[in-house]
Structure formats: structure tokens, C-alpha cells
Length: 349
Ligand SMILES: Nc1ncnc2c1ncn2[C@@H]1O[C@H](COP(=O)(O)OP(=O)(O)OP(=O)(O)O)[C@@H](O)[C@H]1O
Ligand SMILES: [Mg+2]
Image (cartoon, rainbow, N blue to C red; front, side, top):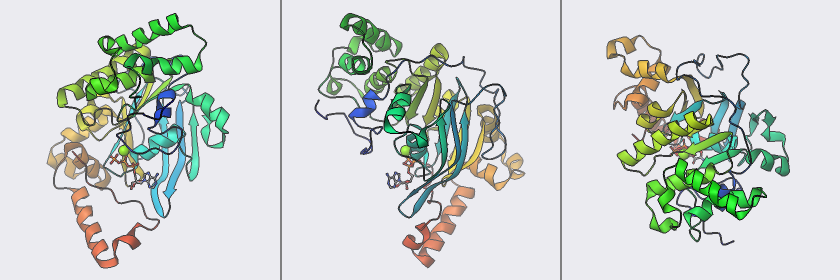
């Protein structure tokens, strides 16, 4: 097959990157593990805390002490995060804070430098490639570009994981493709090629393919990036609807606050490669909506989160950027990067 996936995002180097293989990632039968629960049920503990509200539930994703170093740059430092069955966990943070790196390690694109990641109860860090591929068949991924094959129609793109990972006959596959396209509201585009559909439709098509074999976990990297506000809101609604209808667990990386507040059950805030908080959506809403006076009594960590949520021009993030710039002017950029947490760029929104 020609390597013609529509890779407008990051160049991927590994099997589970935004390459043609991303399209094959979403194969494998799976049963939604639990019904979606109320948005504010699972309230996390303190910064980086792990506090699943229902003790009997086991996390479907469990990260412990996850650190990632690229060359001399420490991108993630000691990340602890649990994602519970059926919930939608939003990972947010400024550009360069390590969101995509976290997601890519969760799907086994590359291993952490230190720490462990369990996916559906299995430690993916110690697995050989065959075992990893078996786990990967139970997850679906929507990359930023949709990563569709340009030489195949939308329907053929969605059929691909079914053809590669099942013994189903062509008639059954055809029916399943139509069902998946219906789920994402894209029946009419089945016979169109990626070049003939809009960015929002490509996202839907990528999602239909990610759903092809009923994954237990769906991963989204910036699902609304590059879309107009209305299309973006429609994709958000689709994510919520799929979560409710299928009971699928979702991990969504985004820095779009409107999206985050629409889709999240819980949210993890990343900053400079560290988790500042894992809390319910309601907790973040309360923090965002507090008056300046109320927020004055908050810790610096919480005021930093609040500035990010509100997109305020002034606050702890801005003060830190000025301090970083001063340090850089004194000591130089290269020295300041060496095995220090990576500098976080200001929130892009
Ligand atoms: N494969 C890689 N090799 C070297 N450095 C990398 C690699 N992947 C990411 N990085 C670096 O890690 C840091 C975090 O990148 P990451 O893509 O995780 O950020 P992000 O939070 O997703 O940002 P954005 O919101 O801009 O997508 C960046 O400084 C980036 O340059
Ligand atoms: Mg990213």
C-alpha cells in the first residue's frame, strides 16, 4: 500500500504515530468497560493526586512516575495519572507542556525514560511488540489530521481495520462501515476521497475509522484544532455523544478551554512536564469563575491554573515567563534547557 496518509501533523516515526499505521491502530474487538458516570463524581486529590472515587473500579490507564527525556531535555517529570472506566479525561496545558508526549506514551508509540504505564491492566512498557500490538487493537486514536489514506475513499478508510483484523466477509464489513459513518454523521461521504471533504469531515472520518472495531479506549490529540468554532463545537458534541452511547473511555489532549469544559469528566493540567492538578470539571469551573478577590487566597499553583483557564494576560504564568526570559538573558538558552523541565510556552488561547 502506498504511504499516502494525510499527515499534516507531526511527522511520525513509530508505528503508533500519525502515519498510515495510525489508521490501523483502531482495530480489535472490545467491550465498553463501564457506563459513563456523572461529570463530577470522581474528584481527584491534591496536585498530581490519584483519587478514584469508586474503590472497586480499576483504572483502564495508570501512569506512575512517568518521566520522559529527549536528548538533554526533560519533557515529563514523574507523572502520575489514572483514567477510570468510561470517563473522559482531558489533558490540558500550554504548548510544549508535554501533552502529546504523554498521549503517545499511553498508546505505546515510545516508552517512558522512567516509570510505568498500564493500559487495560497490562504494563505496556515491558511488552514485546506482539503483545503491544494486541493491546493496541483495543484502542482507537484520532490524530490531528485524521491521518486518512488519500488514495482510498472514506468508506475504504473505515473498512481497513476491519479487513486487516477480522475475518468478516465484505458484505458485513460494508454494513459495519455504514454504521460507523452513521455514528459520526458522515454517511453521505462514504464514496468521497479525503481531498474532496472538509477538515471537519476528515476528523469525523478519522473518528469513524478509530471506532471501526469498538475500541475500549479512544485517544484524541487536539480534536478541534484547525476547525472553525461551529465545527469544533460539533466535534465536541460528537465526542460527548460517543462517550455516552458507547460507554467508551476517552483521553483528550487539548488546549482549547471551551472544548475541555464541554467534554471533560475530569481534567489533568500539565505544566512544564508536571501535573499541577487532576480534578473534576466542576473544580476547574469553580476556580475559573472565582472573583479576583477569592482567587487571591489560592495557592500559586491554583492561581496559575486559573490564569490558564481564563486566558488572563496577567498572572503567575506571565510573571514566570518574564523571570525565565531574564534567566535566559543571563545564562543563555542552551544551558537553561539541560535536564531542567522544559519551558512552557504561554497558552495558545
Ligand atoms: N520526538 C521528540 N524528540 C525530541 N523532542 C520532542 C519529541 N517530541 C516532543 N518533543 C519535545 O517535547 C516538548 C513537549 O512536546 P509535546 O508535543 O508533548 O507538547 P504539547 O504539550 O503537545 O504542545 P502543543 O500544545 O504545542 O501540541 C517540546 O519541547 C517538544 O519539542
Ligand atoms: Mg501536542
